[in-house]
Length: 270
Image (cartoon, rainbow, N blue to C red; front, side, top):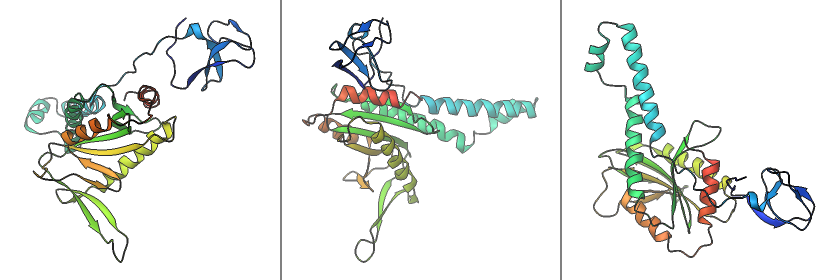
């Protein structure tokens, strides 16, 4: 019998007799076996298979599905309400901004995913992951020898992200994110929540977790432009890939494959 190993499985010598939960073979004390921490059961070493690659997901897939769902629902409503003119109305009017936002988001995720294909093989990527118990998702996760990166792709075409700072001398320093002059600090708060969930899922509390808001097709200046706001990196795709690649050469003790598998199991494909 074969089974895909979980990231928490551990090979050990049994202190007490047991039985394999898969084939019911008796396992005397002192036998080498696989201990499954999550179920607190054991199984034979021979019932274990080699590493199976997790599903890395498809960037932007859930956003595209939601865009199509909203489009189809609008078309159905108009054709039902206006049997003769529904097609004409659809041809002469645009989808609501709330619907188009899902398509823009999908394009942003897809284009950032293209940049992430340039990463070295020592880094592992996950795309479009669902956060259990919520309606939210994580656009991209990158596991590197230097830690885990949680990445949110944002497509504000032709608009410039900027850091706005108030206080810092006589009163507390307050950092806010603005895009084309509009307050967007809620994006930073959302990223911090994602980082908290990813940190909680890691088997090792010593693994560093970084958060990044990556603006695709934004109006970045020729010199400088990237910045941090409340501990979150704000940057463009090429610079993100550069920083991730630099981290690949660090001699840290992160188990890239193990962490990648653990996060893939904790955050399923959306």
